[in-house]
Amino acid sequence: MVPIRQHRVGQRQLARRLKFTERAARWGAAAVAVYPLLVLYPLALATENLYIPLLTLALWAVLRAGDRNRGRDFALAGLLLGFTALTRSVATLFVPLIGLWAWADARPRRTGLRHVALLALCFLLVTLPWSVRNTLLHGEFHFIESALGYDLYQGYHPQSTGTFSADIALDLVPILDDGERHRRGMEAFWSFVLADPARVPYLMVRKFGHFWGLDRRAFQYFYSNNFFGHWPPGLVVGALVLLCGPLILMAPAGLAGLTLTRPRRETSLVALLLIYYTGIHMLILAEPRFHVPLIPLLAVLTAHALDDRPWRRAARRQKALAALLVLPLLVNWVWELARDWDLLTALVGPEGHRLWLGY
Image (cartoon, rainbow, N blue to C red; front, side, top):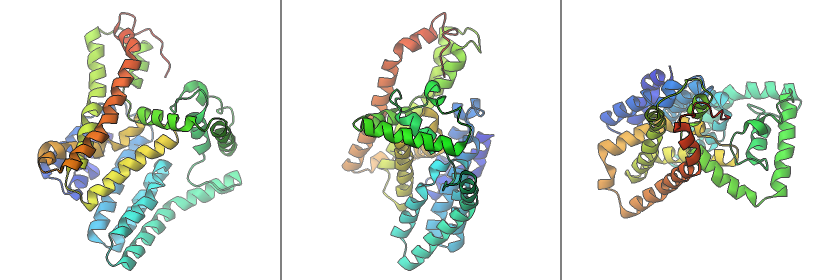
């Protein structure tokens, strides 16, 4: 359902709002429709099944509001952002950045301020009722959810590398009250940070690596636990290439397409989203599936890069910036494969289907 929804709702319209060609819009939508992780693992994606189309649709609505400069368009954008944040609260802090983006280029500024206020009001209209419910339930202020403490506990635990670990995740699970689990998690988080503040930059770098990690964990888990039986080595390698290859192609090409294209107001919002979304997970908790909501955006940027070939008109500084952005991704993937080479070799081996790897 996610690929079909993405193709029909927002994907091609988003490309048009970014002023890309119709062919780039079609190619981007087609790439999302056949993206392996979205096709094969819809159950494993959990809330992303709804969150991905909502985030894409909200971005389209914000771009349309900025283009048309009408109050009702900003109201619609605020409502869609509210529904997006209710689905996954990580989108919440992107709303103030959208407000700054909308106001910075508004003419006259007073009208821009009214539009931003309307967007914020409609966003709060959707999200505040749930915040009131959470606050009354737990006896203290909570906004949309009360899992931040639990996530920070996992992200900064002394034995954590900044990603999900089943052993660490189980520590707070016996606490059934969400508010109490949040409080205990926040207390532990601050104790971890204060005990070893120098470890925080290291964890942020590791979280960047986890966020942009290759999409292979689910397949490794299911295959190594004998869900599929034994496969020939070529089939295992083919499955890994099928799952990991699209990201290896799309992320660098998408970043290059964004960086090399002529700077515009629309592309600055896209850049802001990519920076925010990566950064917020570097601060909290990261794992490879968290980059999946950005795939529709990367797909249309990749299609734009292949169709319009913006590098032919790009300035030298744009090319240097593109190389600077792509290099960390390439280094991360090479390091990831080198680190896990023995595991991957064992996975391809005769007993790869009985390695009994944890998730």
